[in-house]
Every structure is written in C-alpha cells, then in structure tokens.
Amino acid sequence: MIQAMGLTKRYGATAVVDDLTLDVGAGELVVLLGGSGSGKTTTLKMINRLIEPTVGSIHLDGVDAATLPPHELRRRIGYVFQRIGLFPHLTVGENIAVTPTLLDWPADRIAARVDQLLRLVELDPALRDRWPRQLSGGQQQRVGVARALAAEPRVMLLDEPFGALDPVTRERLQASFLRIREELNLTALFVTHDMTEALTLGDRIGVMQDGRLVQVGTPQELLTQPADPYVERMMSTPRRQAAAVDALIAGAGEGGAGNGGPADGGTGAPC
Image (cartoon, rainbow, N blue to C red; front, side, top):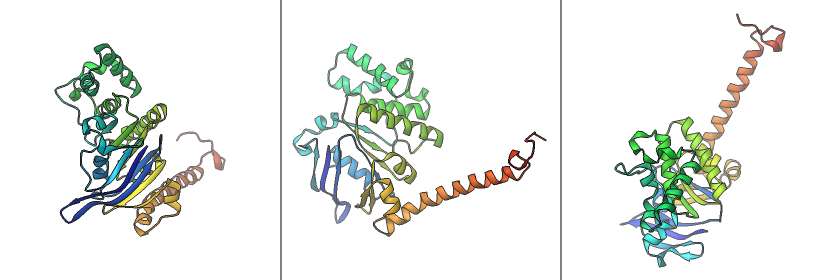
C-alpha cells in the first residue's frame, strides 16, 4: 500500500532522511520509532508531499505520488498531527467536515458523516456544535482522528498523536485507535519516540537514527534480535521497566502473604 524507495531529504549538506526504503502492507500498522531529529516526521511529511524528497519515490497503492496533484494526494490520506491542529474558530462538526466540504459533498451527507465519525471515536454526536476550547485534550484528539477519517481514506499518517496526553487518556486513545484501524482496515504509519507505545501498537517497527532506518521488524524481533547497539539500547529500556514492574508485583504478593493474610493462616480481617 505504501512504498517508500530510496527517500532522501537534504538541507544543504545535511541529510535529514538518508536513503530510506520501507514497505507498509495493506491493513498494516508500522511504527517509526526514534529520538528527536531522527527523521521520523520528515519521512511522514514526504509521504503526503508536505515536504518534497530530494531523491527517491513514494507509491501509494501502486500509484507514483509524484504524478498526483498534492491536494488530491492529501485527500487520499488521513493525517493526525501531534498538536491536534483543530481550527479554533470552527465548531467540532465544522472541523470534521473540512475536507468533505472542500470535496463538495451534499450537506446531508456531511451531517451524517460527522455524526457517524463522532460515534466511531466514542464521542456523543451532541458535541458537534461545541468549540474546540470546550473539550478536554483527549476529546480534542478524538476529533482530530475523526477529521482525518472524514473523506474515507484508506491510509493514515499519525505524528505522535497521543504524546501530549496523560497516561490514562493516552492508553484509552491507543485502544480506540487500534479498534478503529481494525474496523476500517486502515493502513497506517505511526510516528513516536515512546518505545512502549511502539511495541504495543505496531505490527512492525522501523527504528530510525540520524535519518537512517537501522532496523525493521516485529516487536518480538526487535526485543530479542536487535540489529545493532543503538537498537539494543532502545530495547533495553522497556525490558528493564517490565522487569521492575514484575519485581514490584512479586514483592507485593510476598508482602501480602507475610503480613497475616489468608496465605499464612491469618483471618484477613482488618485491624
């Protein structure tokens, strides 16, 4: 579905993205993982031609993206931004309806699509008439996802869409996104610097360093077969975190058994 071949973006002598080749299959979710400045967002922007590559090509569903007018290409791709990017002077419904309005959809079709999408992202359709400032951060991000889906794209690009949210809201939105992607059979390229997010969301993960794609594999492959020291260092963090949580759980169990709980014959009654 998405084929990036030999993508390079240079600014002067600096290669921000350097000879990147990546295939994302139909219905697949691939995560680009890397630190700040690794080239993740630039890669995403080259795919929908917000940035033109210096060298290389991009094909979507077999069509060379360079042969399509940029506005037509972007209407085929849903894009969710890191900072949400809702228009403050438009209501929730008007924000979602931006692209269908540009495509001259009939008003009744737009209204039905807005309500359908609000339900899809688990929001009450009654919110359509509210302003973005009246929503929580999580609600705003759900509206951002709904807006990206408005014109029924088959491809989604997501640039750290949940990075600014608290952990509980973030986990809920991750689960919602996985459900939506499966329900609509979307092909998605998802950018993050969060290793846990990458490991839990991605069918495959592409690790980027200094503009280069250093390894692509399943979460299991990256955890057990890191290709180089950089990937090994990245994967050591979630392994340590998982071990620490396991130790805490084990310690809590032992402490409960040793403090007069039912496991050692105590009554379990409160003091």
